[in-house]
Image (cartoon, rainbow, N blue to C red; front, side, top):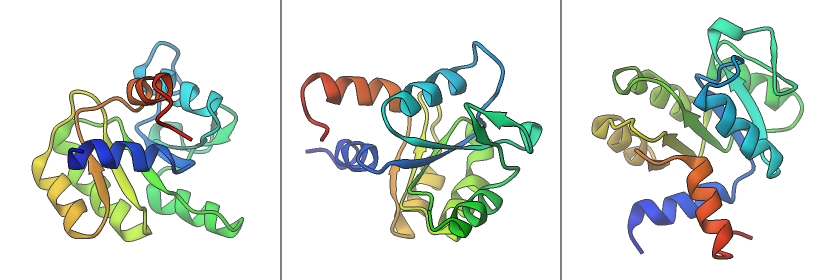
Length: 148
């Protein structure tokens, strides 16, 4: 199996996902994907400085990944993977922060490609996926019974 497809399957098995760039505005792809994941049992951790302090999908939104990780750690939790809805050129700091908080994986949504950031994540021991939609991949793998 291709390395990235294995990473897709593994990350979709982890249940706590920080969604960087999650918007509270209806019609935004980030909100649609996060709502889908939440309906399928994932804990969504919104990260977007524009919505910090507000609730998105019933969860408090944090300004940074570090803030989100600290809030979860206070309750005994952790961020498993980071689903990223940011422009490709804005991805490297997100990956650096994901590494710093001890996330296990980073996911760059469909249309987002940053090979350097993905390599940095992998070099730090994280799984990394780019240019794939977590909702589409979850639907695809669920349809063939490939997710537990």
